[in-house]
Image (cartoon, rainbow, N blue to C red; front, side, top):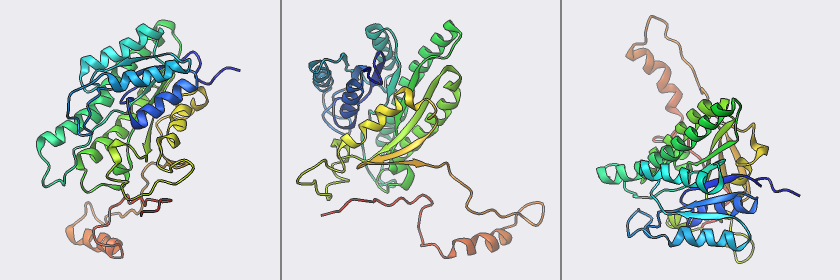
Amino acid sequence: MSLPLEGLSAVVTGAGRGLGRAEALELARLGAAVVVNDFGQPGRDGTGEASAAPAEKVAAEIRATGGRAVAHTGDVADFQQARELVELAVAEFGKLDVLVNNAGILRDRMVFSMTEGEWDSVIRVHLKGHFNTTHFAAAHWRERSKATGAPVYGRIVNTSSEAFLAGSAGQPNYAAAKGGIVGLTTSTALALAKYGVTANAICPRARTRMTEDVFAGFQEPDDGIDPLSPEHVAPLVGYLASPAASRVNGQLLVVHGGMVAIVDRPRVRAKFDSKQDTFTYDELDAVLSPHYAERPEGETFGAVEVLGLKRT
């Protein structure tokens, strides 16, 4: 019996630890050959000396179970190193079929205290990093499709966050980057559909080095799988990378603790038409202020509750 991803090759960025590691192992379990990418800096804020150890360790884990894997220790936020990552997959496995973008860092601070460097570094790794690898993977698929005159197999799974959906007061850089990733994903989905490529984004909730502060108060169970384990996220990535998900494109899905939710596109809540050529201040006050009068002051438009978790 063949495996769902047998004969396919994948790149997983940020795969040396946490979610990326779980995703790389899952893709390998489903039959894919995997390029395990991780820059290997020890600090979750992107500081410390880069190391090949995290990526090489995960690649070795995959090979130890009979899979095929190589490590890549470049920085995906560097345009040339992202090119080399995609080229490595093609050189090692003949082609690239699946791209999972997961690499990221955190530099949290309130918007009034955040420095330019803290903003730029997070946008660079998350948003530019997603763009860089997507750019070279998309060019690879487009060239193959044009050479054969037919669609190819291509899957992109990007990593957004509920910080984009619900807001996160101390993470304006992170929330903005994750919102940008959704925009990048939907644009890419439209651009590459004719070549046979799909692009989707997930908002995972998991206990990792990146989220150790966020979930510090949520107790791990004494037995069974932790509801915040990356093991709950990896199967969705495996599915989205598979032939079974050929009709899933340009979608955003929230996943955690044995739950998957499909997020709808924003919808119009209310609509008001001016009674003249254009609105006046008084007219806008008359129609909009009553609409918001019953809502709690300061409530955001996209509030999402944290469900199914017990804080200790």
